[in-house]
Image: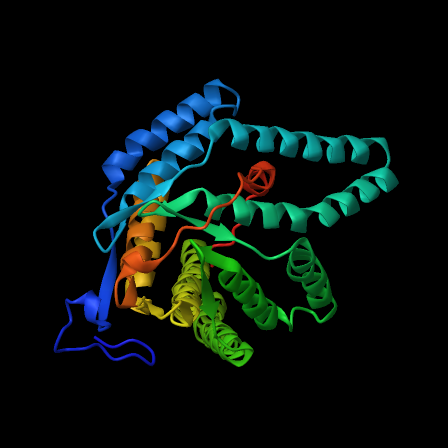
Length: 361
């Protein structure tokens, strides 16, 4: 198998000690039935405790998923502290409650509070990245995240604000800069990751996605809704007219839900195929067809079961994404040296969790 810019040594594919490049696939051993038991207990206890248990629920969930993720015969570990996460979430609740109260007192005071929250959010996201990586380890070696508060404000505040004034035209540029910041400032022990995807490659991905999305929708509108108008003009029964209209709307939604997986596939492959850890190259091989199948069947399962399929859907999606990723390792993975660091505050983690801020893509 071949990765981007890398050829595997067919003579010694299984000997990492001689510097040959060998493919280390990521495996994910979690199952939907096991996670369902964790998920349902976490949900019930979080409801009974009015959300207090959610911090312990997060730790329990992450420990299960991390320990189920294997690379080169070893699993990852999660070391997050539930009490620290709870403190962060309490701070988040106080912050958001303060904003809502200020908004009720006066729209102006509410606006001031909103500006203050927006001003502190980049710092919180930065601390969240530090917390997540510091509390992740592999073979006893901790991950870490560097960067600075100044960089966090640049990428999570100033550039997004500038993007608003360009009507979103800077979105691919912003996405590339965010991923470059995340990946290059992340480290495993003392070894930093690197990221070399260009801004142009992000624009190509976005342009292809929007061309397919809007081009396909225009075709569907002319073809499908043309038949709807024809049925209305033919003086058919009301039931037939409603049925044709619902069919047209369903076709639009179905098309949108098949194009979205294309974007997710292209963007994950783009990001991870341009990420390295020293001489080790990552490789992502998501496919559009499989991504579409997993997402649509997950959505159908959640709707049919009124949400009870959610943990199974979560495991299926995680398993596919993780097992489509591999590390093209050059030499041994045991050569990294663990870096020492101080405990990182979980305040940012709590606030970012509460705001449902996702940095995974």
